[in-house]
Amino acid sequence: MSLFSSRPRSSADPEHAPEDASLLRSEIRTDKEEVQLFGVGLTQLLIWTVAFTDGLTHLAGLATYYLFKDDLALSPAEVSLIFIAPAIPSIIKPLFAFTSDSYPIFGERRRPYMLIFSFLQAVGYILLAAKVRTAFGAAFALMIIALSSAFCSSIAEGLVVERSGAAGQTLDGSVDIVTKFIGFRALGSFLVAYFSGSLLEHVSKEAIFLTTACFPLLITATAIKMKETTRASGRDTLGQFKEFSKFVQQKIIWGPALFSFLFMATPDYDTAMFFFFTNKLGFSPTFMGALRLTYSVAAMAGIVIYVKFLKNTSFKAILLWSIVAALPIYLSPLLLISGINRTLYIPDSVFVLSGSFLIEALSEFQILPLTILASRICPAGLEATMYAFLMSSRTIGVVASRALSSAGLSLLNITASNFTHLSVWIWICGALFVTPLLLLPMIPEAREAMLLKNEEQEEAKKNIEAAA
Figure (cartoon, rainbow, N blue to C red):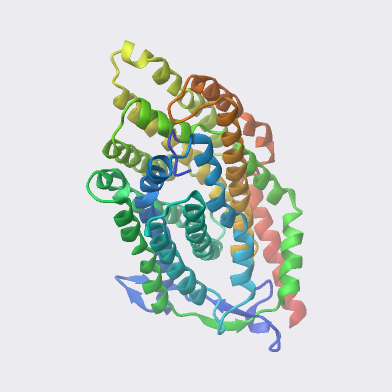
């Protein structure tokens, strides 16, 4: 949305589960039952570490864009196209989540996968630092990074959903857990945002990639200390898949998934604006870092405003009015391209920073309701799988958006130096920006989500009584 985006329990009680079940499940201990560090349970600390690390890795974001623009001399259309590759692992996050839900390693569903893929993510950044000379080599390194990050985040998100469900039936409990997870991600991004640009004027891109490689190792260090206990689950892998299929067929599941897809699938002008900012307006890497910092501050402001004032507001109302309010701001680059802002004595830099702040804050209002809704409707025992399915619909939308953006930029001949038709492209993006409103009726309210959860718990209770 920004002008430059970086865009469980079994259904049967474990105590009554068959002892010869083929699948072991991990019972995540509560904070009071496990080792504490700074007063926080290690499982909770691991969740926050994954989110925080995800934010910290944004340090390499601008370096990656400059690598494509300067070192590899790619056009805006080519950059949009190449960023499809690292989005693919997020599409198959349900597979990663299903794997961790269904195939424990030495009886543990979370920790071994975290150790393997956090280390692999660090390796990906090291490969990116190894003087990448081709677009294919860069895309390969980004794929490894994205694959590892997607696996770690799918597990962490599953833990978030588990704890969201354990927080009781109140919406406030879910809001608190989900917003803290997103907040730690925003905090990590905030801490490195400015330096992602300013460092480019003092050190090499390779040095930035190597520094970023250290961050995933925070997950590795935390996961080593994490403890999981194992208990038998009442479902085998086929049972897991059948239950997953049953839930996906419900409108309350596929409705939000379809909305999330369309919400992200509309084309955007982010890549084109990066080239316009740096090549046409001459913005320095330091300013681009300051722009990133603006996004981070706006994201955290959006989270705080949502928690303080909007958490009990209708999901549909928030999505409707945030999209309507965002539209004129989304179209504001037209004033920048035409120079009207300078006629009004508003410098380019001030105009860009202020517009970016507003659009990023509004983006949080659009993302948070969908994320909280997803955490509320996931069935017990399939938290990671179902949540990853709902979130992957957004990623499929991102892939579609990048493909459409690449095609549009190519058709309009918008290059690294030709911005003649950039205003036309912004009008097209703006017109399609509001199309997700057509699917707004498919978004359930919090009450509907809680009813589904209650029905699922009643069914689980019946299964327990039947097993007994």
